[in-house]
Structures are given as structure tokens and as C-alpha cells.
Length: 233
Image 1 (cartoon, rainbow, N blue to C red):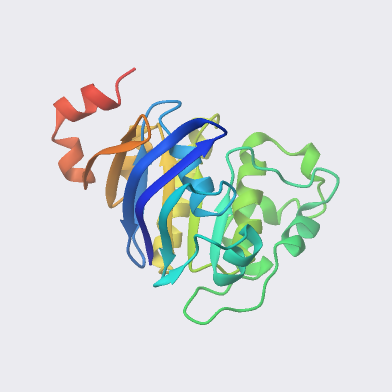
Image 2 (image 1 turned 30 degrees about the vertical axis):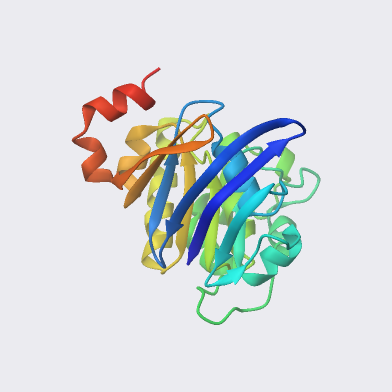
């Protein structure tokens, strides 16, 4: 579904990503793990076209995305949930969802507000609430729901558990597992190793803009040396 090869990216003269490569198959949940500043968010932004790569390839279902603009990539069926959430605070829940609406997409799950309220019951109980009057966890749910209104075939989640209360983190994990059952491909960046173990099939570890390790979550769980070297604080 998603393929990234030899990706290099920079902010000005500061290069952040170095020959980075990763893949995610249809219906797979893949996590990109690493410490703060390792390059996780830059990777997702570059895949989405928000950061223009210096070189390398990003493909979705064999179609090259590298030269496309973010809105073109979104129209092809790649959703993106930024770390900053970026909901419209002066719009209510239903209005935020309508902003994200795209036509039904062949080969991808079809989402309606009614289906999303089954996935996020809290949102269903506050359809008229303004985004600016929602808690951080509620805003995170709304951001994911708004992205799903675009009926993506794959979705990028940037630090979905960061700053959330434990009970909301559990709900977020359940949501990601539900998306996997729908056949959606999920690539997420995370620092929360426990959260990653609960939701992901495979992991990549990034350090200083380079992939240092890849394996299944079970393999990573059994490799204390890798976790200590790349993930411990």
C-alpha cells in the first residue's frame, strides 16, 4: 500500500532524513518509533507532501506521490492526522466532519457521520459542540474522524497517544484496531512503546533520520538491547 525508498528531506540547510525506507501493506498497522527529534513527524510530513523531499520515492499502491501536492495526495486516498490536531475551533463537530468529506472511494472503507459516531460515541453525544470547547482527547478523536470522512485507503497518525489521559489512550488503541479490521492501512509515529505493542503489527525504529531497526512487535518486545539503545530515555 505504502512504499518509501531512500527518502532524504531537510528544513533549509539542516538535513533531517537520510535514505529512509519503509513499507506498509494493506490492512497493516506499522509504527515508527523513536525519541523526540528522531525524525518521526518529518517522515510523515514528507510522505504527505508537506515537506518537499530532497530525493527518494514515496509510492501508494504503485503510484508515485513524490512530486504531488498534499491535496492531490489526499484525493488519492491517503489521510493525515497531524500531531497538532488542527481542528476548526469555531466550527462544531458536524461542521468539522463536513469539511473532511470526500466521495466514496473504491477499495477503501466508506465512512459517514453515523458510522463515525459508532466508532467515537463521545462525538455522537456532542454533535453541536464547538471544537474549541472540547477536551484534548475529544479533539484528537474529532481530527481522526474528520480525516476518515475523506474515505482514505491509508492513514498517517502522528503521535496519536501524546498528552492524552490513560482512559482516552485505551479508546485510541481500540479505534486503531477497529480501523485495521476495516482493512485500512495505518502508519503511525509513537514514543509510547506500550501503546505501539497494543496496536501495531510491525515496527521501524528511527534515530537521527535513519532507520536503525525493523521487525515485528513480538521481535522488538523480546529484544531488550534494541529497546535500551534506541528507545530508552
